[in-house]
Image (tube, rainbow, N blue to C red):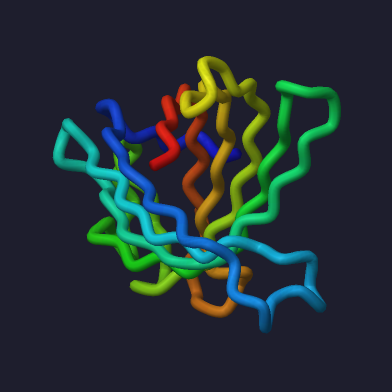
Amino acid sequence: FDENREDGIDLGAEVFFVSPRIFEAIGSPRPLIGIAANTAGDTSQIYGGLTWDWTFWEPFFVEGTLALAIHDGKLDTRRPDRKALGCRVLFRESVSLGTRFLARHSISLQVAHISNANLCSDNAGLNTIGIQYGYRF
């Protein structure tokens, strides 16, 4: 939410796992690992965390993710075409709204944010919005 903007498209992939029984007390989130690679050579990231999902009106769903991300972006910069992210390890949150179809497929709109929660001197944060296709194995 500042004047600095990064270019390119992020191509990503996420792998979700079955929620272990130990997570039942916190709503049975699914562990995930993911990657977002920026096509313009700007900030790319790998991340891992937990995703909660709710089907609110079959076949529509909402997902919320809390994760940690490691990125290759700038830590401290004043360039208007890059973000000053402050720390190498950041918090990553996302929310998706989507629909399931043909038993194993889904499509959703996702908004994601990475930042350091003011734990480092710079904290520009990086926000992305995109479309996701999913396939359940």
